[in-house]
Length: 282
Image (cartoon, rainbow, N blue to C red; front, side, top):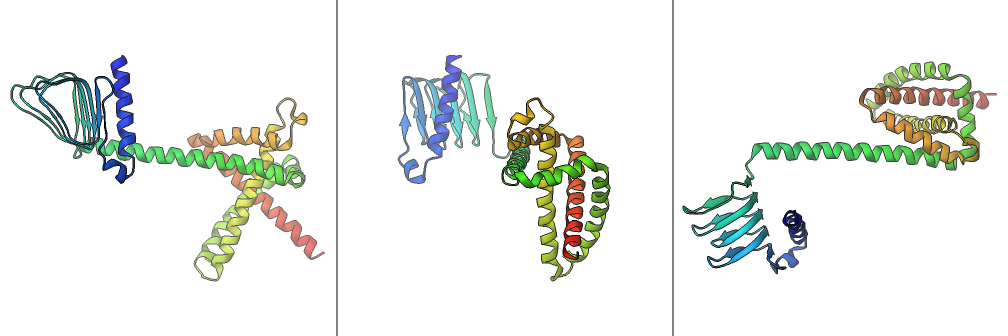
């Protein structure tokens, strides 16, 4: 177990050495604590030499002596006929050649650069990690926007919470109708150069009211928990937004919740614009 942990630490150290600037790598450092050899340059183990662990990143390794474990990344491994490798061999991104008479372990793992399965796994893993990171970032942004809106618009949020409490179904129906109208109007505006700024302004308004709707619903949800009146409104918004964002991350449930928030935001936006119009022409 101790040897495996030491081997893992050796691998991590080699990666750090490889990540240094080119000027530092030009020195080709070799570290040899105890009976373990680290390097990013070519390594040769002579016939009379014996060493526990060899870890090399970016260089070629030639072994003619006795080694327990070998890790080579980005380089080639050549085992001469007098080589004896007892425990473990791992080569990534290079080739492995053995002369007749070499005695090696059965635990040999070789991953070449032309391995289609490995490349596919790397591409798939990178894509999945990117999607997960995007989802996590978007979730954090939604929570921060909700909390920020509760802090800066604390006095104005009640004007949006009351309509949701009193006439939620009406707002959703208005939002559904406004959504259909928005698709039609937006399609026409995007096709013309003059209408493009209007489409952008409308899009920004929808985003602002989506944040307002998320904040209002989050404050209402957070207000249902015990001691809600003793907490600050932004803390209620944080509790509610965390629950909403958690549900948004579920594939099917998240879609319907997002659709509901979108319709609610359009309902709030439409009623707000209608009220502004009545005040303007009063």
